[in-house]
Length: 285
Image 1 (spheres, rainbow, N blue to C red):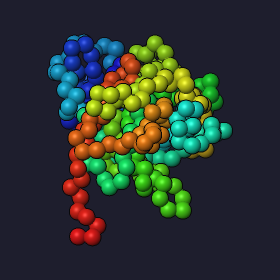
Image 2 (image 1 turned 135 degrees about the vertical axis):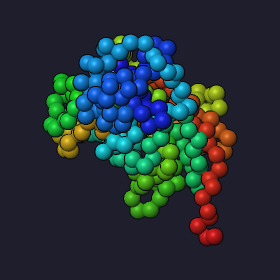
Image 3 (image 1 turned 90 degrees about the vertical axis):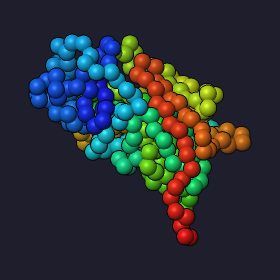
């Protein structure tokens, strides 16, 4: 099953287009895409009886398939080569921060560049489908609704400023958490723990990796997080980025006005972000 958010409404993606879940189910399911994750097993059972598409799927009108998660977790330094290019040793435990929900955006967006050095980080995003508390590694995938594509856009100057890192704030400017174009259930993927992911800037590939190279697998991340906090349906986890970020290049390379960033995960889809100059007033004006 593939679920999407078009104009704020829950859609099932089927061959040839999309089906509006609320209309097709006669109101059995809400039009609210976020509400789907609290009844995800029921939605999957119903979706197996859905027929042909009754409307096209226009990705440019799509929002994040998980528009208002209660909690957004992100994992740093989860690929050994990315840890090395960032100047860090391989971590002994997951490095966890958050991206604030106001940063969430859809798969095709225009992003205003704040002052500083804006970097790219393509990631696989896990969407929680069942409440998880102290879940063992062997049962972790049972709590996953599906996977989607994400970008952990990061403003490096703010991230590294002050006496302590400002990871969460620097990674939560408006539009800095694009995701989509849909959430794909695990049965749609041959090997959900070994997916190719990558991104390109203006047509030049800058990142490419496989999720099997994660230091901490999806199962291990869910077990670790759920041992400390409760994960709720519709929560999301950005699982880390492979090497190739701008900060790790010599010289460093960052995003500029007019740049187009395209990100993908095999078997799931693509994101496209176009960057424009900020329209925010200068602090001194």
